[in-house]
Length: 67
Image 1 (tube, rainbow, N blue to C red):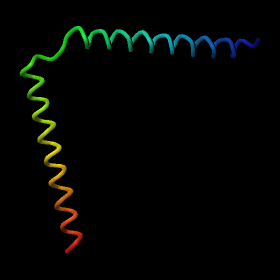
Image 2: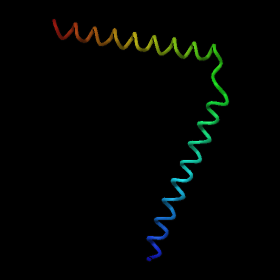
Image 3: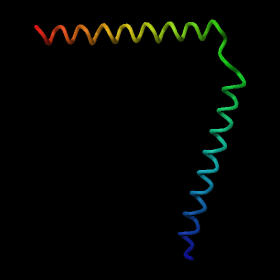
Image 4: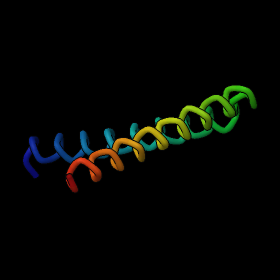
């Protein structure tokens, strides 16, 4: 086999292995340190407000198109 092909395959294997290890470590860290209840509630409120604002904006655009 050519050296370039071996290096290319080795790089791909190492990159995929590193990605897999990083994904597993980040997933473990995320489950080991969950959000505090107050932070989780604040994030859910912010998301709800964002969804309401987006719905209002879409309704306003639909109303403007009808006029």
